[in-house]
Length: 355
Ligand code: NAD
Ligand code: IPM
Ligand code: MN
Image 1 (tube, rainbow, N blue to C red):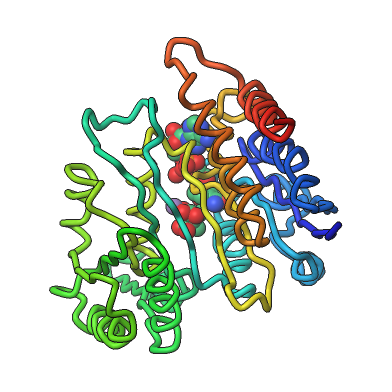
Image 2 (spheres, rainbow, N blue to C red; image 1 turned 180 degrees about the vertical axis):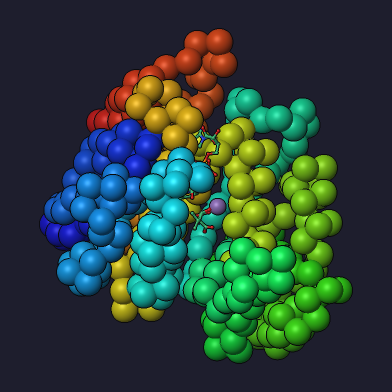
């Protein structure tokens, strides 16, 4: 059996609640794939900051980096909490991990599961994946402000797009598109206004695309993409886009698929030089934290992405099948606790492994 050293970062708010369920399911399925999961817990996030003043120490980072993979719940406090004003948990922790561990692919699949309560009445067969760039764009912190707080304040936040960074994520997106039945790739950007950043994305999609003649390429401006995600989401197969557009589109994708509590993600370093990190798309949801009402499905489906990444797609499929079966039984008027959902999915995994 292969030992996987997994760094577990439950985080804040509903993070620990949903991670507990994800770990339950992982522990159930892992032996069937010949995996022994050796977990190290890391206490990181707003809670840790408020008690120790640390966001992510060099020791934390070194220790996390020495693991094979990372499972994260969510980090961050109540938006606008003045005690966290100088902490910048999102940048100092989450983005620091994504950047340092070179998670240049932020993989965010969307499926509308049969029987799910989608806000769209007739969505059709929806199964697409957003390949969101994870290490560049407006997220890099290339900004500044002067005369802060005066009427003459000037603030900027400049998007960085390198040929190296754009090409590698575009290539990854073409590889995925090539492997999928529909073989379609949509670049989403805003080339009509962001002419420089848009220009490099368009050109590299054209150049790399020439190597993938079987993949049909199209392009949408990001504003129009939000229309089609609501009116015709079945048209999408693989979407490749920059860090910020990908952030926004994937919350929307989560909403149409039946709720942000279903949306999983992988922050992937495809070269394997650093551990990849798997986490739900959602945040720490302070509004529902501690009530056992959060949906753990996104965290559980993030475990499926982890299993794919570890090269055990059958185990990933077992988890997805268990989720699919569970979703089909859900009734809005009969809500279950977070741990009851986790138990049901774990039991479905166990039953399918026993067959
Ligand atoms: P959020 O995703 O935490 O919550 C948005 C809405 O979705 C809330 O109404 C919440 O109750 C609901 N929701 C989220 N997850 C749910 C689930 N599993 N089940 C049911 N409902 C769910 O976004 P926010 O309120 O903008 O952010 C809260 C905090 O989380 C902020 O500090 C933010 O920076 C942080 N955040 C962290 C991550 C991360 O760690 N990856 C991601 C997004 C936001
Ligand atoms: C996400 C989150 C993060 C992002 C924040 C919390 C930094 O919204 O994972 O989607 O913008 O990437
Ligand atoms: Mn987001």
